[in-house]
Image 1: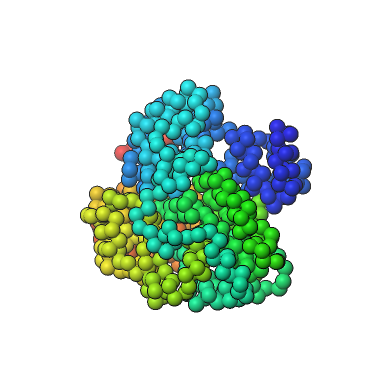
Image 2: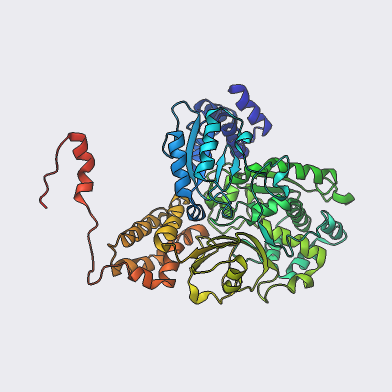
Length: 600
């Protein structure tokens, strides 16, 4: 073990800021992080042991306990339950002989729950030793577990055909499908890698920024911040090291558009990062890749190598003296909150992914306290297309305040799940028709942190000033119990994924969930509904945008489906006790062998 851990540390140049990479490498080697490995890290990196332990404890895919020779993570998102997750989970437990979040006595198989893994268009799905298994059924589970017990290689567990497009590439070897239904600006097949770089090397740096400004490109992550302003703020900082980050940590349940771009158009992303590097005079970029997409890492590294050989990355790109830019991939550890830009920076620096206070903003003080631009995958792809085809071409698409196209990840109760690249301004009704959805009760726009809308808003448009979204669209049919099947799941997701830094996000969201459960159980009163609306003010005091929207599943449905909540509460009652004395003393009675002495 000592030799292995020392080699890992040396590979990362004994840099304590690369702690995440070291921990992930150790986890991969041993299927957990042994105490002896932590002691070596403490000694070699001169880090407090508590820092290493608290970092490990923060990330879902880092653990101090052995996870099994075969480690199964079964997605527990809404989309999974819509497609039979309950039956698949039961089959795993019965075939393996253990309950979830445990390991067999012989250490062969570990079975765990996990949040959305970016496969909402092909659920139920699971990660098994970092390989993706899609469209699971109880029958498939039986075969998979049998092959595990027979000791077969992980690749031999995959009986289905390999996926479409680049998913069948030898470095991906995945059964994942792209499910692309509509291609426009980003996904079009007319892209030639390096074409935009050839154009910009003949321009001044600020000319490139001005072209992005004239295109009125706004960030595609959901907030819609003008892309050119981020670049300008960073470019105007004092000379010195600057960084470019691509945020590929799409952890919002129901989102999978970045997965498809990373698979089919990775050169587009990397070229966008290089263009940004040229524009703000940066020589280093980092792609922060969510751990659930680890199966793409070798393939992406290979693409980077090919681009270096073509002089599209590296030193003096395309023969332009002084244009030096290269990219490395930083793997996440499984934490939804790391989609927030400052939490992403903390994670990359080897810390718990807790959001920073702002200001200062990353453009001024970001990675390693240096000025940093952080753009998401779709934004950087748009940059390349704008510089190739011009800002007038881009502005012809979409609406006046929402220019260009938007990739939608559509899942849920519809016939044609998958990726749709549409122009901003499409109505929900048009979108539902496009996806083959009928008998629709609600649509979740922008994932759990977005809005759950009713039929009253189906003529509204998908655009920044109306229904803004980072791309997640979940269609909810009339057969679903909206509160029990959807809202409760989303609220539990936020409880699980909170970083715990802020009191409202750590505690009040639990009270929200418990109040919702009380209402679902038929014991809610009007005061509960009033309280949940009032608590909205407190939740907005959370440090980051993720914490500030963690109550959205409940409050947006309470506002848009008031009759649904009102139908479940008790009338003519201000308060009702939910305390059950029998349940409260059950554990004590079992331990002491006593019978409760309670008068009925």
